[in-house]
Image 1 (cartoon, helix red, strand yellow):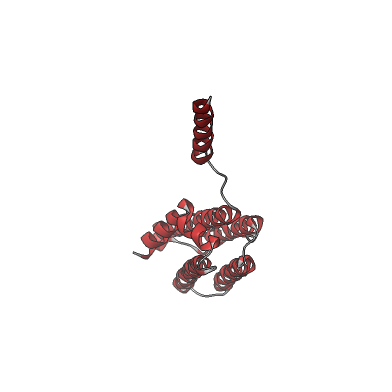
Image 2 (cartoon, one colour; image 1 turned 90 degrees about the vertical axis):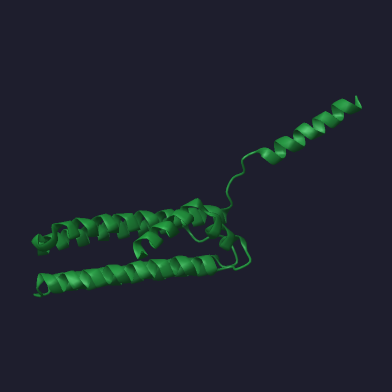
Length: 179
């Protein structure tokens, strides 16, 4: 009887330790943010590559189409980040503020590009503006990601960003672009 009771306790303990656990709200937030950043970055890279592949044959219409594609990707990013909502942690509102600032910065870069397209500038001038603005947006995204990782230095939000597979993939993606 004692053996059966001990065996039942061991079985229950092992079952309780080995099961899959649901990710915390911080882990879900980090995964959603990093996945959204990565998707946006991939969309922008694809668009830029399409324009780059056109080379000297790039027209103002091609650039306008590219801006429209990036604008759509940015709208999707904004919606995805909004749906993620801030995590319920000590620095959750700071995280939300970082994300809002990033969206504002990206939209400012898109407005700069659109202004260049609306001007009577030559294609080379517009292409330079596009290149500079896309580079700035990438820097802004990378900075926001690093700021999010640095929030709550000893807490679960930092751990979530550092341990997320989606965030590790995003970091690899950013590193590849920077190299």
